[in-house]
Image 1 (spheres, rainbow, N blue to C red):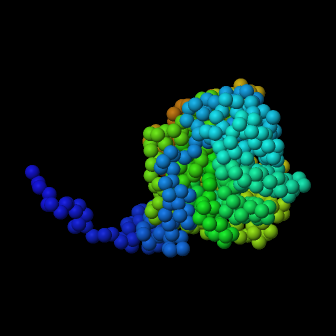
Image 2: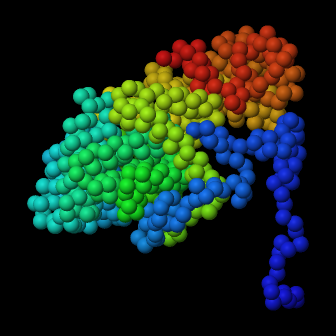
Image 3: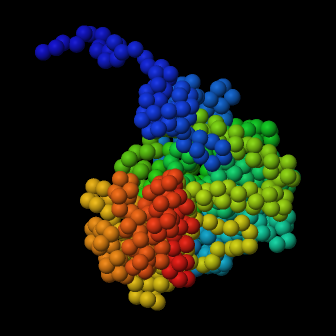
Length: 632
């Protein structure tokens, strides 16, 4: 038996500390094997970086040298600049506020869902009121049986925020609730409404009404806020994380000006604001965004003259609707779980997990149960909230937080130079910037550089669509609402219509050459690609050659074909098989791969019409295939 010395057993004592340069040399060797012989030193490291939006990039390796300098120091939880959390204890004591959204237009059904949520783990309510949800005069019925001194109520009524707020205040008085016992947020957000609807005559009168509500809350209602700074309209219009943050800062500054002009102190005005941000399945970006948001707002509060009591940003994180898919919606459970984790680790005070069937209409009881239990599992079983700022100290997270904060600040300054958020919305500056960002992201989605599981990757053509009661129409007229799946959803809708008319989906014949070892990889790639557009792959028989391809194609019922095999077998058989497929009536013949030079020209002369390969524009290819088949 070996006895360890009293001073312990230093396992790494005999190993020298590796340097970054040594690691880069190892990377160079790997890249050389991949054909990137020119990447050496820092260039080798840069070759492994992942580009993000806002001009940012994620590196493959972070060390202490990558940590932000003193200007970007995170500080301590509960202290300026509040990067590590708005309170010293974080959410360690009771976890984050589990906030469920309700928008059913029937107050009685909304009430049933509200009570079920509160009985099963939800700690606050987010009510969409007005034309897009619960009628304003139905708020009391929706809250029947709710202990309003225990369950905070957050309103979201758009242009109807004032009558909705007055109705809730009336309900508090009717039930004898002491002013100091009222909890929640009245949801005034005139600039958010301007972003959503285009604003009509403008938000000036609404801003005055918001200021009146804020003064009412500041006067003896310490648990009730009046104003929401909702950044979701900018995220849902395709904006980046920095653009979402910058717009929220500009909106918050505008509200500070309005509230202080109405007589509130800067600290009182800050305490009337709650900020709402999107949480996505990019967990680290979500974490960094929430941390950067607190740092940025602390700076705004500081220069506005607010003390520490008013500078800590109150945050409500909501799982992104942009990432939610209509096809294979069950995968949304995984997306919202990761987003909830990111929101919790990022320090959000309240977190809303949207039901997985959100894109299909009003959620059912099962979907709401899964949504609320997502937070419950992370809080009660994973103990995620028991560590204060668990991402703090990570060189990667700290660097990303700092870079994102600088990018957001630059956009915020641009908005301020344009006259502020209202002026930037009216002039089209915000819409143009967000549209340009979404266009770039759409290109990544079309080429599957940003994959969407269940939609652009691994789609299931045999799935049965969810049937849900339609949700009330959201207000329009302002910024658009986008989804990552929209281009593929349009293709799948064309396929569904063809299925309804003809009794079968459009088909593609996979002409696989040689043994399985030669064709499986590309046949799988091609099947995945075509199914993303609702085109059913037919791979029978398992392999064909020039003599059997024509008969197999005719038997498949397909209108187009795709050759799948290795480069070696392509060189031997592809030209003859392509010619055979064309003679059998194939409208178009594709080849899975990316040949170059004379080989490519030879395939084209033989009858190959186009090539499909990783990184190609899948949406353009699939759209053209459906067009050639006459699938409207």
